[in-house]
Length: 397
Image (tube, rainbow, N blue to C red; front, side, top):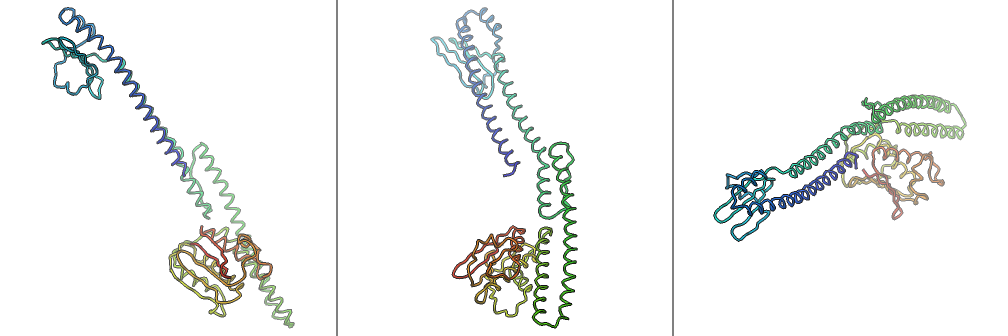
């Protein structure tokens, strides 16, 4: 899970908790305020009712408690009853407008009826201020969340550029100039990238020079062999120079895999198999049985994948005790099977350079190592199994 998703989840949790707490506080505060106001206006209502026949005293009480007569009676249906006291000659009602903080005192005595509006309450104002503060807290939380996302947004660019660099784009640089830790990280990466690019370019040049310098004396040696009359010595030297040439080519190919960027294209499984067989020198095509059950599409570097498949086919031919070997394409995998002895060690052993079966010392043990590097570079999987006397290597594409 990305850091942005984690922060978003934490923000949502914080926002929900703050909203719940705000609602809870508002509910408790509303009940407390309503209780205080109800108690206050019950006392006032009783005092008014006691002096209902004394008009002068009643007027004084109206002024004392700052009560005003309500003129519009049609709106009373919007009020909820907080207090209802039925008396012998009348009744007292205290009402509150729904979803608001307006209160009414309704006193009925015989044929007389008073509907009085109450003044604004300080408690209600305090409650409003508290609600505003809660809203401000939530708003500030949202602003902090957006600011944190803005601070961390360069991480997306850094992640993308690091991925490009890891995939072989050595010219990748991070264009972030801020003075904070993220800016320092970007600057440090750029310095490291420049150093690595220079080092790799130097290594490529050295590898190219070594390959050239090795091939030249090998070619001269092979030419000089033709002048030797002793047939046995001649064949021995040919084998030595041929092995040197193969070793040089495989070492260069293995090293190039660490430096080369893949040329990704789309092609079919049949194309890959044909390309791989084209890299082999087959004297007897009957040694290979190709079975394309599903000619599925592949996204990858055709050259390198064909090299990997060619190495697997070459090994299958080399170590088979009977023919044909079987190449099969089916359901996003290509398998190569040959009848032979089971490998004496785990497959991981043979994927390392210069490792092979001791009883079959032919070659230099670099073939499977090259296969492994190519498969890993494509993020594919190489699997090995042994069943019914058949060794099977599968490339999961």
